Amino acid sequence: NMRSSMQTRSFSKCKNQAGFTLIEIMVALTLIAIAMGTLVKTAGSHTHSVVLLKQKTLAHYVAMNEITKLQVTDEWPSTGKKNDSSKMADHEWFWTREIEAVLDPITGKPSDKLRQVTLTVFASAERKQNMNKLIAYIAKPAAKTQN
Image (cartoon, rainbow, N blue to C red; front, side):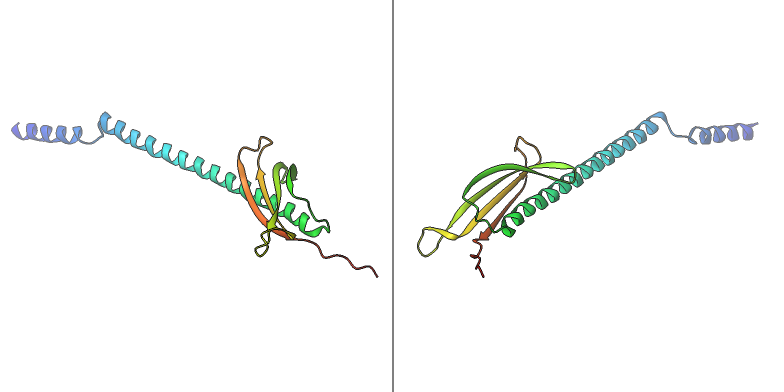
């Protein structure tokens, strides 16, 4: 009789320790929820970074295209500021182009053979968020000789 009583106690101790308590389950679920929240936040941040990088790359291409247009024409651009836009990758990019005369290092006067072009590209017409800024120099086209 004593033997069966010991077996019952021993069995009941094992039975009580076989599962998890409610508190242990709640702690585990809380940790999983925190981990999942962090993963979702990291994935969202990564997606935003990829989109921003794509926009900055396209804005750089827009700036390069506009400067190349100035370099391939035979026109000598006048100094000053101009606002305009260009379309690329199904998006309208707004830009500001500023052309300045470069000072001759010897005379200290504006050079008649070199211009500095600063092209700033924006994602919207408000021109608040600068996506890319490119500075280039263009030389005055050589005079064409007539045959």
